[in-house]
Image (tube, rainbow, N blue to C red):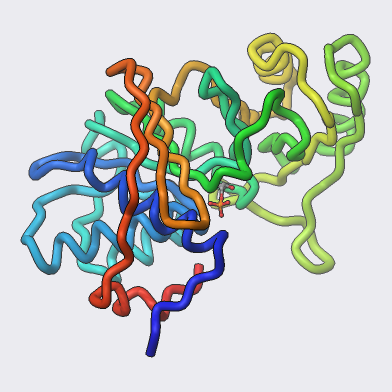
Length: 262
Ligand SMILES: O=C[C@H](O)[C@H](O)[C@H](O)COP(=O)(O)O
């Protein structure tokens, strides 16, 4: 079997693989969710298996927890570990200040809690996720099911006074029923098109009763690994103040990843 990746999957894979260079023996690591993060979990699992890398992973979704366990990564809850050295996670959009929209897969509540409880957060993303202004990707709002239609109306009313281009909120569905998060909540997706002031919007949305958390990550991420379809990555590290470009080779031995399907 060959490890034949589409350009977008190659971009995700090389970003994920490069991000594992941030991981050292003995670290407690927040394991993100989504397709890019799944590649990172697979790469870490491979290091655990082949190098005996000694890490503890705190997963940000039930799906990531299942994958990590299958791969032999030691898994713990955030309450067991309390604080993490690093979280590595994907994103739906990121801007030049490394502010993010997350939650396209419905996991942003746990992701935000875990990333905030980490010394560092590194985002891994294909280059298409970089935007000038956040908001083309619908902003997820984790919402308590009780009274969600009233909450939705309140959100739309609140958006009238915000610096955004669109104001529609839609309930995320899973076939014919509402999508339910790992925390038992619904998700309202906000179709804002462009967010003028992400920090202000985040604060205002979190004031609305019934909103548990929004998918804006402001001042949480401090490095991004951007993958390209040709196998190159750009690493922007705000802490170190560096920007580097590298070629990540895909090896024959990477065939072990060929069955990955997240
Ligand atoms: O809820 C999902 C997460 O925030 C993901 O990290 C995000 O949606 C990016 O996912 P992907 O890597 O599959 O594009």
